[in-house]
Image (cartoon, rainbow, N blue to C red; front, side, top):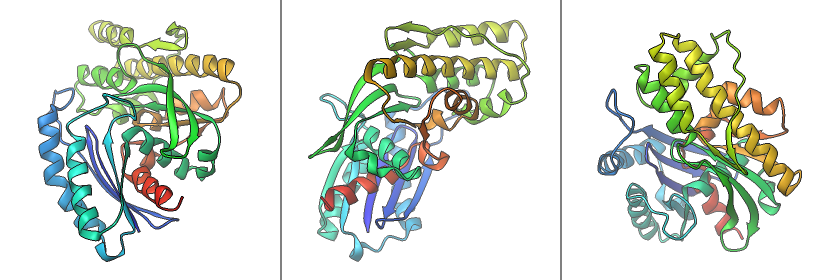
Length: 306
């Protein structure tokens, strides 16, 4: 068995991988009504409380742990750091020593990509070049992914949002409309009831996008008394249009490589429908799209079986 820990900014996650099946437990961190996020100190506290409970629910047999892995940083680049990941790392170190099992460290981003590949039965892509999008509250990036002897895969950022991230734009619009954070599911639900069609021209600079205008426009629509269904659809359509433009420009630059979409935002129905109508792409299944430790447990397996 291979054990993975992920303590991201909004979810505590533990997962076991036996080489075929994933068994995972996760808990969304609590954000006060009206707030648009969590302070790191609050996230650290909640992870500290959550992890022992999740380990108990996972029913881990520590005698059968072959290896442990943890997301110790947001991305595999110098200077990438968030205090919340220290909670998972501390627990992973303790379990590794207790079990006398190897410990492997990777990034939250690599975990997202591996979870997405597993969920669409394409872990074989780790041996090829492909484009991965990591779209969430903290990240809006397109990555050129290549095989790597040490890290399993190397993810080089080739495009990004230069200001607001996709999840931030969605959550800020949702909080404005009175929804509890995170707001993606509520905007997704409401957008399905809108009859409006929006012609969106995304703000682009090369392969990069800018999303800050979405929040401003949503605020104007709300002040004019436009319905929440239409505002929700506008916000999601705007994010979708930006991602579609990024995808088109990246494929023109890098060729017709496989496309993989991961991150919590990519569980949205409208965005997924728009992108798949234009491109052949793999989307992580919803339970593997939002933050999770599944990809981290898979990383432990891949590292231990090289």
